[in-house]
View 1: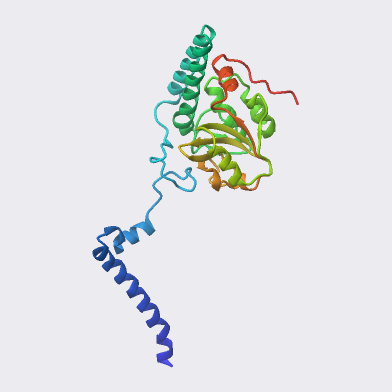
View 2: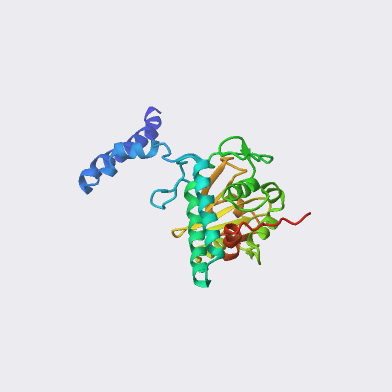
Length: 277
């Protein structure tokens, strides 16, 4: 009887010994210290190297994504607005070729500033269905307000309350200005592949009951939004892993970057009109 009871113990002891020997011997046999038992234990017990609002942790450094707030937010905003106003003044007196170049400058200013200077201050701001804070990481913010508020801060002539409170698909129409990009009913992979085939830049996506920014950057696609599921904050995640996209029938996009009409309205301070409901 005692021999029968010992068999499972001996079997698992042998397996444990085999694994330990492999992890101790392999580094010397392969000249790869990363296969050591110590490295194995460290890898399994390592803490996240990035904040919780980077969902499904990825290599932000390699992908040139800044996820940490840097500098003073108001100073950053003032610099962006001053620069876009300068571009607007130049645009008024420019010839056709010069106007095209100014729009390119506006596109670069908008895209780079929003991704790596403005939005990083908003990461970690708590989500709430009724949240409408105007100050990053102070108070709570709903998904619609997270779209309208940073744009308003960057000098877009829009009513952040009305845009945030309108239905997500209508908000996309207001920002697009022309025909929206409607991929409704298509798969999550189809959406990602569509964006990967285009140029780098920002979009706003309207879902069944949600809205947020999409960004194609260096052959990756991200969703940046005030997430009403975990972690219940403004966060960034790979678009192909977003739960909101996966379970939404509606997939409607407004192109922001590389959209001459959108950028021209920005630098000339033209209004984005939200229709009365």
